[in-house]
Length: 213
Image (cartoon, one colour):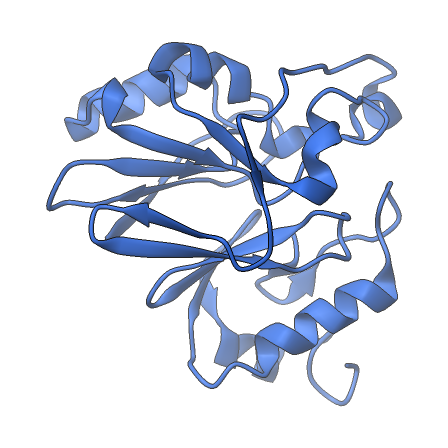
């Protein structure tokens, strides 16, 4: 699979697209891009609207979901979120939009409710759902063979905040222990910032090294 980022305006959240180059199908993780940006992206890549198999959320904060309904309308693809964040889509207090902008962001409910250990398929590839709460109640990471899409659980040299609804520093630390204890050195594609690896984070991330966990 190939992973490409759609340039999303406004909040600096990464919108990742996983493309199975063999069959031409793809998955979108965290629809922060507008419908216009999405259409421009798939046109340039030669992808078809009906090739989008899933829209996957790493969590339910506003900056990761703003394009969800628009892209669903364009493609007909189902949107999936962990059960712990399912109500973030239509609750502006829980998706934090009201906290920052004093306005409501209300989207349609998810089409698929995910649980820890669920496995989705893209062509011959598997995408495993791993519940990693702490940033939010329903934060997840998506595992493929070589990559983890970490959302706002783990960034390059930082971690997600825990002061919004559903956040817990202690819970996030438990989730981070799960990631740093992996035997394989996965590449991480985070919800903000640049791509890195688990080994680099263990070495350089101040929240992970020096016994901070």
